[in-house]
Image (cartoon, rainbow, N blue to C red):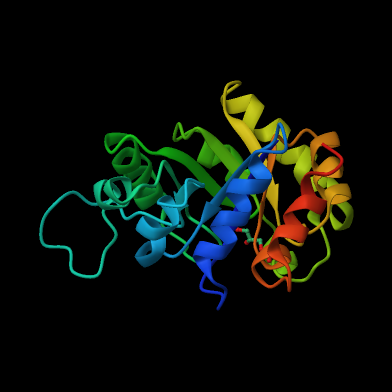
Length: 214
Ligand code: G3P
């Protein structure tokens, strides 16, 4: 299972969480990754944890003040990027451009979407993976795999009907190993989560719990 811990802009110590991701990753067959804010990518990557960006813009080098260039996050040590997270929505043409920018920089891509119809559209853009995250469940602690299992299964079907090779992930409210197992049982190849680790008193213990049943 692919497990991406999105630190959003939570007030956690990104290096401490990354060190926990790195250490717990050594104990499991799951692939644990961490997505810090862009400004923290370099020092998070230096821990040895697999590091992802939360976003890249559909741009090339040039006059783009305030934007995030795919090559910059790759140079800082990111190996992949989220695109179109629910908290950083893009227009379809810009999702396409961001996927192309990420691929140009050698980054792996996960395009997020709200529902199965959007998952189909996202899969058609050729990312490595798509991730379905119902916005209303994000940050609630109620796992999508329990509250809305149909949306995960329908997302898997929608993606497969467009591109048999694209991986499907899910996220929102996931915080326990049982949630991860339930996601896998619905056909998901991985999970995105944030608050369950980034807001935990002991992020390493939260990560150990996540991968314990895998
Ligand atoms: O990117 C993952 C995120 O949106 C899910 O957040 O706090 O529900 O795990 P959370």
